[in-house]
Amino acid sequence: MIASFSRVLGSRLASYLSKSQPGYQLLETVSIEDVAKVLKTGDILLVEGNSRISIAIKYLTQSSWSHACLFVGSDGDAAEKETLLEADLVEGARMVNLKHYEEFNLRICRPVSLTEQDKKMLIGFAKSKLGHKYDLKNVFDLARYIIQKPPVPNRYRRSMIALGSGEPTKVICSTLIAESFQFIDYPILPGIDREQGSEGEVPQYYRRHFTHFTPRDFDLSPYFEVVKPTLEKGFDFKNFK
Image (spheres, one colour):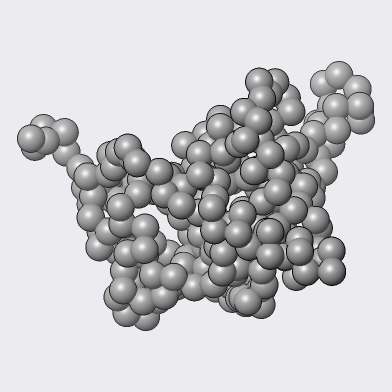
């Protein structure tokens, strides 16, 4: 009975948090077709959303990016076909096309030096999560912070949305992608054990748990290249009008 009530409440809460808010400003000047032309398999597309939950994530992470999708590759029109794998708040892990996000500000983050085998393993693992539901524990936590609007110190913001339930059949957008990259041992933001070694020695790194990642981490990561379609087309400021 309690579990059933929790599922119903979670679903209603997810629907409420997914509602878009007015006043969103699109700053992109590049078409979604041009974005599609530069995407490569394994790229991460970051989205500046405008839903209630997006606003909460942007506030708690102090970042423009509230959502992350994984580009799985395409043999045709990448803008029209379902080429983005994501974890949706209501529908869970699913595939959508690029035009689904043509009204939002976007950023492409590209992992470097991936072999074709690496990409195959990465995409295969991510696709194995299709159909999994969104982690509603994360939803309840975010709703609590939205409603109360507490003055949250910077050092605590990350932990507020970084945990979830940890159940293998539940997903959050950034943790699904982080787990996929960790499956092929690709680094995102490794932690540093500052207690290891002495002064002057190489710091000891350790791998963060995949549930501890948020969308902005792919933007901040030193191991992902930021790709901008305008520059890829050969931008020349002297011809800018």
